Image (cartoon, rainbow, N blue to C red):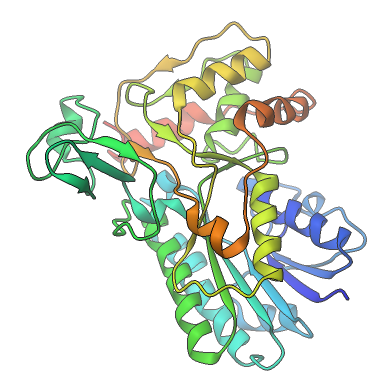
Length: 373
């Protein structure tokens, strides 16, 4: 039997795919989304096209709007967030307001309906780790903080052991790794996760936090210069420009297809999950940023190699990819789409799009604020 479900941020990349999957499973879905022009364009109303989904346009930090959106709801997927690392470093109040305060407003209204709401699933992020997990040949497991300024200014990109100074080797990042968020965005995602888990536990509301790694897929905002790297690089290539790659391009990430993120959310809805921490949702496979740039250029048949910027962007980490053991055990999650399978699907959609290349302006803004050096 279908449930009445609210998806905050339901017009975004993940939210829209999740909404479609929930409707297909027979649930009655309501979307709450502010339809921010940076993500959805100036005519944000086109972002929600489904006639079988009720849409409430508004902000999660407005109690009246949230109360209206929660009316009659049995489960909540909290996907709404401002999601950009670099921009969060200078629009601090906007990010804290939307992510931290907005989650507090949502939770206050959820608590008031705690006898009706059967499940709360919140979108967390791998960014809360800061650097991923590493090992040192001499010292063993290492959990380094952000690379020192003098190191990255000297263009020594790899992370070194905080004890002995030797080079570290990246390993899959487990949920037990200490959290060292390196940006305002990451701090607010940690807020979202811990607020939801703490309040859910206190009031007996079953709550699951999913720590997404680097999500990609069709529907990403190509003209948003602050979105995911696959979309940013695609927009550059569509405009006949090479992807701009920071540092030396050998930094690695765990790229997870949006359909696997949806899979994890559906499992979290259906299963009784006893996890007092966030759960990693990724593939467990590290891929360098250079490799992604090459895959996209090859897939679009564009003879443009990436341009290595050789600069450091504040808030960036060197390596982080997921240990998904807990997701397997707690959710029965298994990623189904490899990057080499997902990129062609993404590019089939990209070829039908037009995109403005906002990368130069975004880079200039960060440089003006001394957040790139």
